[in-house]
Image 1: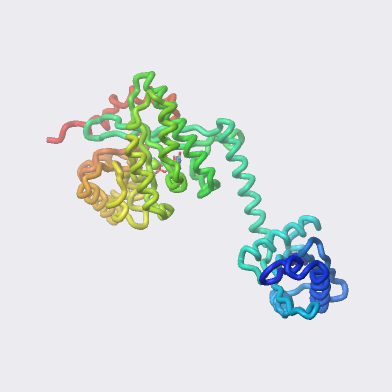
Image 2 (image 1 turned 180 degrees about the horizontal axis):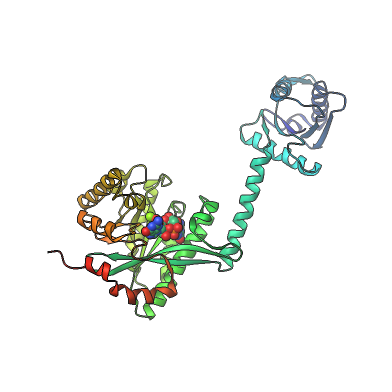
Length: 404
Ligand code: C2E
Ligand code: MG
Ligand code: MG
């Protein structure tokens, strides 16, 4: 077992206050006191100015560290002066932490810094499993950065339609990772790796930039469809969000800002609603509008609906999927549609997989839809052919007849 300890005087560095000779005497008394708690083959070494390492060859439990800390806490008399010390201890256990000696020392040292962070005068046990997880996460994030820099990410687009008029009203951009070994990865397979890290901002900017390039390309091809981009709460809360957005828009002068729409999750992660509201209103001033995504799954839908300046409410697909067979889900869909109407906000149903879903939604007053029944997300190159084919879809065309 390796214990990395860092004693310090409760007020100041003793060398500064008392002079180096008293400092030396203090270190010597300190070492003697610790030595009394050790067994014959244990080792106490001083490895830095005020850092000690203990190598314990016998198993000890947590009481031992409490005893060690209590002993260090006892005032030391040096040169007629009473000096109070406390220590931060980092501990790692071999063979549980099955690594080479130098790495064992590093792990104990890491644990000592955790003890310091936790307020000193305490000990922290190194957890090899947690450390391995952190290591894997670190490698995954590095791999994601490579993917971002080497164009392995791409956007798929899923059409959104007005079922009443039959018109395609826009597309949602959905991120994909074309992984060289693992194939095409869906966001659920890699977004958790970057959750709440600054990489969410890098990805978000990449997605906005890519969507604006796509809008420019479509503009040149005569396709005028707004793109909805998903924005993570971490990204939306960055203070310079709207400023960066304005810069990105300025690089694409052919794209009217109204062609870009941002989807924000109604989620608990939106912890700072005031900051979100502020950024959203700055973006709206630029001409960019907002949709609230996965509506109904968040923690306080009504508050959000009252406060957030959203231009579209997206009913979460989990309610839509089972609405025909589950009365509770039907009740939720009905309520969301009712609420959206009362707040005079347009709404769109996600996850519309069948014509039956579409008919039921229209009967309830929801006319905008997106889902596998209409189209699966597709690469940009596939969209022109889908757009040409869509008006020929007799099943969906029948919905588009004007109501009698
Ligand atoms: P979302 O924004 O709610 O997107 C809708 C998800 O539902 C997409 O999954 C889409 O492929 C899927 N979907 C659409 N229609 C149907 C349907 O009829 N049935 C079923 N079962 N699923 C349907 P996808 O592409 O896997 O994306 C999952 C989530 O990942 C998105 O949910 C969004 O929250 C997030 N996401 C996707 N792209 C981005 C991005 O560029 N940035 C950020 N921050 N998040 C993204
Ligand atoms: Mg979305
Ligand atoms: Mg959604």
